[in-house]
Image (cartoon, rainbow, N blue to C red; front, side, top):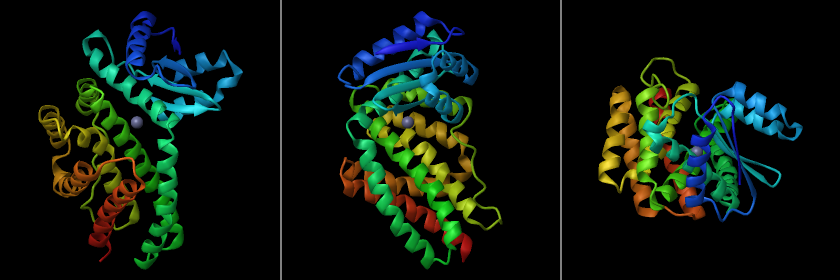
Length: 286
Ligand SMILES: [Zn+2]
């Protein structure tokens, strides 16, 4: 494992935290692992320009912020601090690092490929169902590429966070999500009840749910932390909770009863989420 910290940051502080989390989660990884810790995009450019072979890193940094990805056989964990972390909220930083590192672990185990395979075959069903609802093929292609992408992200995060909670990272993870919820909110709440009738709105509503699902559901068995996070979400998005809490309850039930790495669970998860968007759609398109 190699860890590169941008010059603008406290190298000792970040290297120590990365190492600690790595020892708890990642020492069995087979692929070559590189951590890159930067404050912002500009830092990324400086680090990457030192090596011509890491252009993929710059692209990810510009597009996604903190993330985990692989280039050839190398696994990268990119942490973009955005000036949010210090010794005072160390747990939140550990939560973010653990989250991204767990993506690397699960990708190496083949879980991400399985999710993507299930999603691809599921998309075919969606095309047919949208057609039955009178959605034009062009619109449905846009809808699917956008919504399925978000659903895949959501499911990956759900697997990551569940495993982290089981591995004893509840406190770190909850600290991280609380930091996000308190400072910026996960996403801006969509105007689900406006008069503008289009698929874009259904997408927004669904994405809204998907954004905070992985931040909440894995804590459902942990009353203290789950309740805390639920409260943060409620405060931030009160106006939209009637729609979302009902849908979330259904998904949460499925999670509590059937969560697992099976194709069956993945399919059911996609189905439940999509039936939510159909409900929004039917309300809008009737
Ligand atoms: Zn993630």
